[in-house]
Image (tube, rainbow over the protein chains, first blue to last red):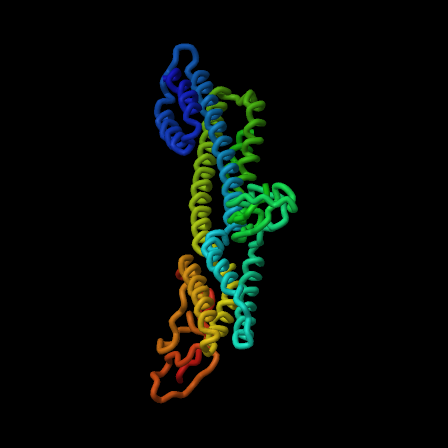
Length: 194
Length: 194
């Protein structure tokens, strides 16, 4: 019985990842042990029982430390996840809105006449207001034209040969790219000089 | 010494909320106990030590149960918070966007002429695309005109007396209200019949 009990910690060490299950097992085992404590051993039954109890108490203490450590890690991990969730919470809706913003910009590239002037102005204000609302949540345009090509923020869809422009720079932007805070949520679609 | 140790569980019970601190204290106390285990008592020193160890092991077991229970509760609470965060994550940005949507609707209430027709159509498509993007994230308009007045979703800014309309119904909407999923993020601003 003593031998069997001393082997338990090793079995449990191996299952460290399944902490919760282990604890339940240990608790069950512990309750069974209480009924078996009166088993006698030749030399000194009390001393043997004492040794066994010390061992069990020590195991319990190690388990307590492990659960506490696991709990602390869970708290930290869960806090980090929460912060990341909150930081980038606008990502999904912004991604849904970007094609509409693209179309808005295309629509505003209209030639303004006397008849359309006031309407175009009113709608341009709306466009700016939407861009400001997005900006307040951390949505920023990626700079591209004239900048060195950067594959992290620019998606090259064409190469051009322009001897007057610098090599490896963006010569034209075909679609705007956007950051959400420090995250690129859409790279700019660009033409790059060879 | 034995008495002092037996009092500890009660002290700790009272501090159950400060679980973490308690565990650290207990662990410290436990280590001190190890060095004091050789204190002798008249009758049978081994039996006294055995009783004390049993008590300590039992305390440790109770603590393990409590930490485990606290851990389980934390997991559940943290999961619920995460789900709520995710469900309403668009709220802040949508609230920022609503005034622009209001202005968009006002701008579109323009009289369409042959000159402005194609521009108004293009911009109306953009408006619809934005509304669709918001809808895909759970943003829905609150119904108001002709509906019974409901202070949970309608904000009455004026009372009218219209004998032809039913009492306590909304006769006019001054500003659209919006839900984000099951949450009212802006009540509709309305006129109500007496």
